[in-house]
Length: 132
Figure (cartoon, rainbow, N blue to C red):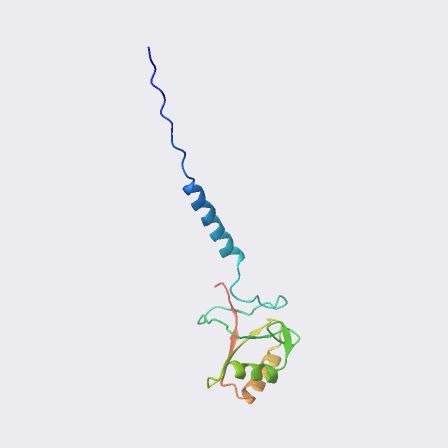
């Protein structure tokens, strides 16, 4: 009696495995990648409950001691505005300020007054949305 020879199965090409690897790489790069430069690590943001979300393109950071930073270096209000005017020639000038929540309100008011005196039309303070 002759037994039927078992049919040989064709080996799969591993496309499912390849798709899984590509998908896992995509997830890894989405999580590990950064699209914007990180904020100054010594700043704790102010919390707000209401507000319009705005993207902070070229913001200036004010630490609790009143020191100003732009892209990781110390700046003054004058040098920051001079650099912005070279990049952005739009009028009226609008800027965004990231402030530490420990910065005294008097220093923040002085900073905004100084910026307004230098020709800034609008100053937005970047905050963190608080929980109700």
